[in-house]
Length: 257
Image 1 (spheres, rainbow, N blue to C red):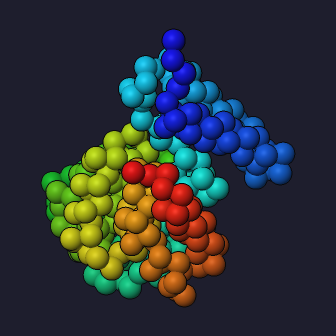
Image 2: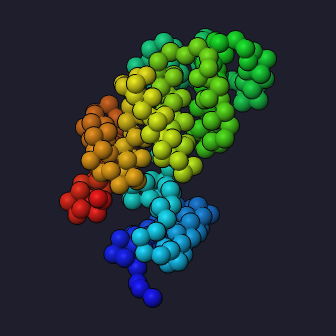
Image 3: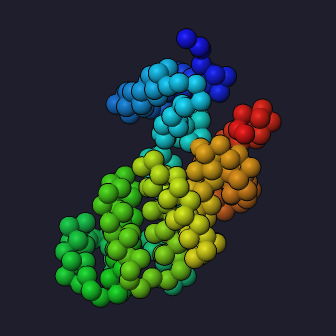
């Protein structure tokens, strides 16, 4: 019986380091116990899979919040902040939803259920796509990805300006990645860039996807301009700099083929 290949051994060491990092974050009160146990369970499942796979047939790494950028914030934390941060710095062209209103309606006073009712009653009207985006954004912020996905996909069939369309495509791409489909993520994120290359959230998501897919040079192409952009809030820029540092480390060590 042969031992693990050098590549498998490196991955095992990386997963074990991730577990130690999660445990440290719990001790430092950076991560709640429930989320930590869920992440650790995923990592241990990956260790078990690596231990039982024959050399050269190791499964792909588990897509998890900590794996994306190593020391970055969890996906949920990053998404919640990035929604506000990148929405705030995006020019408000064509009524782009960055606040709590769309088409003159103050959505802060409207519940999700009320918005669902309005959308259902006007599903065939192209203009309702704007409200779909606003509702999908709420679900996305709450990490209710299934609900968000339904509305983003439906909104793409309606009448949207370029910024809203790019927003929907980018977030569908990110949710595809979180669901373990980086191939679909690349497609949707590519379409988002073609639709509106100035929508920065797309570059953030694409950079993180490429970093997780062991394409550090591709990640740097997307993330370095964001790290240097003074309009990006400091807390987001700090996390992006962690990701760019990780990408440079992968390049210097030759860890990614």
